[in-house]
Amino acid sequence: MIHEDWQSVAPTACAASGPGVTWLSDWGIAAFAGTDVLAFLQGYLTSDAHALEPETLKPTALCNLKGRVVVNGWAYAPAPGVNLIHHASLSGALAGLLTLYLRFSKTKLSDRTSQTLIFGALDLPPIAGALRCDERRQLVLCDSVTAATTITSQHPSIARAVWDAAMIADGIALVTDATRDTFLPQMLDLPRLGAVSFAKGCYLGQEVVARAQHRGQVKRHLSRVTWQGETEPAPGSELVDGSARVRGQVVMACTLPHGDTLAAASTPRAGAALAVLQEETAFPLQTSGATVTGSA
Image 1 (tube, rainbow, N blue to C red):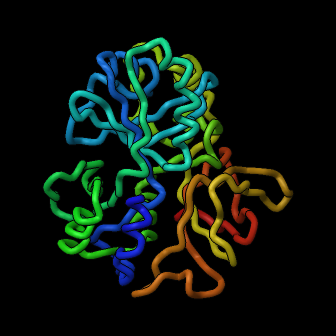
Image 2: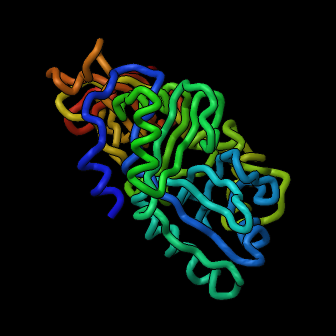
């Protein structure tokens, strides 16, 4: 498979700061194709499927009936279909969510993760053929090791933690299998990113999402925090206060670069994280192997 082939030749010397490119080995891509693909996805994406563009990524999500995010990421519409970039651990969950509904449509879903290498480009000038996420980020999709080698030879290689640290600093959370079916889009701050349209028609979970928005019922919010300890907090880890009360949950975390190397080499380790916390949460908080000490 292309992932194994690339892993054997991928650059090993990676800078601990940007700009540069890094292989997003745990990101995946789903492809939707069919004559009714936009109409179909309009009923499931939290964003407006009809506003998708062929070369620009739009943040979006899919929810379950309870309005909890199952998958989030970025979508774009290379004619004649639509592709969704998401965390690779959710390929099965995405298929499971949509299988029943796909039976009644002309749209087909295929997982292209094993055929595609996804590279993140951070703080670089526009790259030919890249898909732009936002002002800082581009994604480069390669279907061969040769194409991947070209990208990494033309741009500096950065450690994956540099990319993750920038995501955390900018408040961009990506749901994984450990955190799916847990958070409303508002808890992940997805409306701020433009991933939720409150003007479009109905979609799966829309009633719950809209009611929470208009009634102000969201009492848990995404926060940037710092941590220190022996172990990097895993997605889904509970955060408890001094009274052993659960105050939140880790969405994603990274070990921060330290000088020209990564802090992973030192003990204790230190890093940043995105966590969904209850309102008026006081620090410090504890999770397995780490202490969360406050805002990043």
